Length: 393
Ligand code: LMR
Image (cartoon, rainbow, N blue to C red):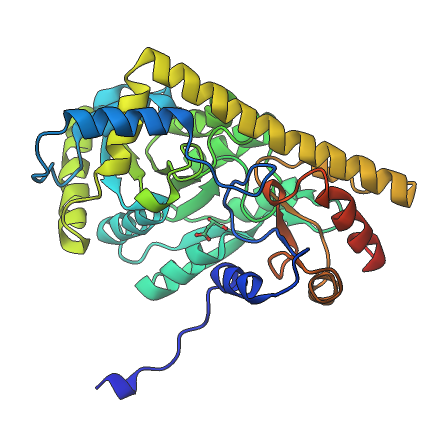
């Protein structure tokens, strides 16, 4: 039987991690996978996480199962962080999932359960794993224009024109903030138009929110999600991997925002059922860390402060890189770097230029020229800028 299996296509982001590790050049630079790194290249355990883990270790008396939806304290802590008071809490069904990817997967499965023939619209481009999971589930997919290769910003007209063609009952995947892989986010006015358009078309928005707090602030990064949730039913896949730095703990939450409490109750049952089918109980440790932090005033303030340090650090790397490129090229054509949000920027390089930067300078970025800004530091910013110019960008 097993000899019937064929090789699966390699995940482009994860195979880049392996290629980087295998490169013997000491000066190599990793701008691949979306993991935050400090100036020394470390992915630190956040201070509040360490303290919360200590408290959990001291206070935990059992490892028995929680609930299919996870410990309710986790949802009760994370739902308000994401949604504020945009919708009544009772209208929100929520289950813990293994990471943001788990929430995305469960969200697609819930859509399939509600509407087996629904088309899922995804931005072009999107996180490659969205497409891979949808293919695995056999769900119909269409893309909508999103990125303008000329301005390296959002193609607002193309996006709105394509979304005007969405059919009632179709689902539309949106990146709530810090679009992966481009870094280009719609402005507030465009978000307003998207929310109204989707409501008028009878479409079902599904928001992937993996980088809350990495763009402008915790509040500002949640604004688009809240606006869409306030406009009607939607799904939200929230990840705690990046903003709490707990990647390996697999901590995510899938939220279904319903129009009333009764519908939310049925959605809650369906989400718990899906968890049971796929993995039974979701991981608990990361979720408990998050609810411990958000439920304690001091830990919460310290976490928010460290998240802000991380965000500000990435912003200053963006500014340094744009300034260096301005100096080298005597032009402002790389200023888009300071307009992009979050961890990623798509540079607009061709696959050949990406390959040249890897071959000649040991700089690793995803093949579509997505860089992880957090992989840079004061020493490597000029190296990347020079490599970009040498590659002919
Ligand atoms: C990324 O896009 O690099 C991250 O979301 C990590 C991943 O799982 O691909």
